[in-house]
Image (cartoon, rainbow, N blue to C red):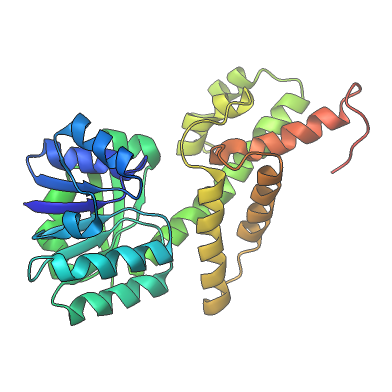
Length: 298
């Protein structure tokens, strides 16, 4: 299949690489041309200097960019150059509103649009093990699903345009609560004088087990926060969640509180730390409350 791909960052780059490895003709575009050229040289994909070049003649156009405005810009520029009946798959995490807008725009111009945010992080993208939650044209998704499986372990159609984005919001609500619980557990274990590795061994095989515990407990306990999805990105996602909650009347007290905690992590200089850095906020307070660290309080 002839594919255009826009957004070759930590997620999009590996996803596009998997498409090339699966034998597809992939033209890759990135806002910074040097990154797209490096991707092309490393993978054998086609370097596209513009969105139009990436989209020209493509049967499938995939994007994984930054935010709602980026999606609007990329889709508007790509649509006139796609082959008739092409499918656009957007892996960006956005508002449900923009997904509905882009679906309507695509139909007007003879294409189909699928909002398809992913979960699994950078490791999932690198290993081709992403979970995809999709909204929009079910028939279009069915047509391209075998292609998307190049970098996915599961793809689930959730309903009309925007349903994929709403499902991703549920995913982020779950993560926010679990990561804060993990941070507090690490903090409690340290304050109690326990060996954190031994604690992990004791509790990780029971009801407390989670992906976050298995992948982030030991690094968080060591104060290492350079493992994937950044705080800035999480705050963007939680902003989308809280906007949608205000619109639909749902009450997300824990999510709102965790978003506030992430703002504190940003103020500590942790904008690019991974999401487990909620533990750093508590570690800082622990240091302030230690005998040698002054008398700070929560």
